[in-house]
Length: 443
Image 1 (tube, helix red, strand yellow):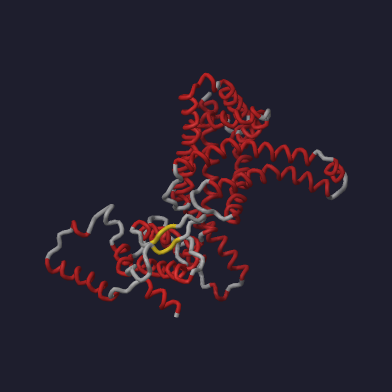
Image 2: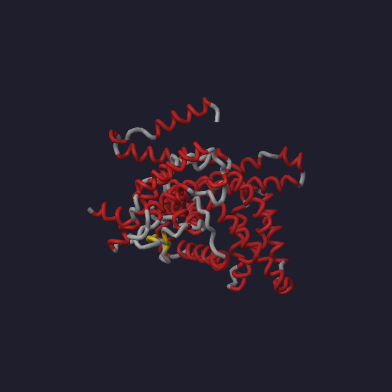
């Protein structure tokens, strides 16, 4: 980053993160909204979202026909397979006449798929292709939410397949219920009375926006392998849904005025336009999830997006504080803390909380419960769990994966100083246990 760009960023952050003591609640709320927008735009410029969107474009091209084939097969059994076609044409609407052509070709491919001809191996590959698409989508959302663990194979199969098969049925049912309500005698009666008639017409125009926002909110809550609260998901869905519908109108205008591209690329212009529209759609969807992440985790707004750079001193203090919270809850018989609880109490970025938790769990100093959401409890009895072990785990983190301290050959004088530092830490802790921290806090 150039020096001028760095200074500009510091100046903007100074305006967005002032002393809040003299500010009113409305100004603080406005600042929070501006902070989330600013950081989300920085992430967008950073390129990670763009890379994920481009990857999903390629995967979508491979999986779109098998995905729709499975959805159509379920709806055919219910006699409602024709109802899903409008969704496909609505998505391709920004491509204009070319979108209609692409939609008809896709439907033709789907109609040509014969499950009986495919056989068990072919059907298995068809399902695998669809599941791989959803898995890549989950990986993209997990990246945004800084989740390292993915769902197990069993969870993927049951969760993904249920959404793929049941999702279209629910969408068609929702459309059917909407159509039934709109054609009812009560609605017809109010249509003739103003201002109810104008409000109903406005509601029908807003319905596509609301449907897209509802689908986006569902994706934001379900796809990441972590708990996403309803309010952040809705905030991200509202903004992303509005951007998606608006960009569709703008893209349609671009397609109409892009006759010179058709002249240059000929029939390839259709493919190019489809790729661009898929990329824009995925980018907007991921951007909305990124917004939801920062709304739910405001403590992560000021974490460097260039890398995870936290000093060992900070990690050690967070680890001790975290162990005290977990130990006290266990000692007093209170509700065990979740990761969100720890983030809220300690008031540091959830990325740091997740990092420290991972190290403590891996070394069995902390144990995960079977509750949903996952809670945490001490891995040993409080009077046995040594604080020196907690500090040791954090100080030696990453040594197994990268460079161990034992692999570095030090001169005698340097080794004496380094060993003295280690001995000093052990001397200060002096066989103290987690129970000492818990009792000290209780007093």
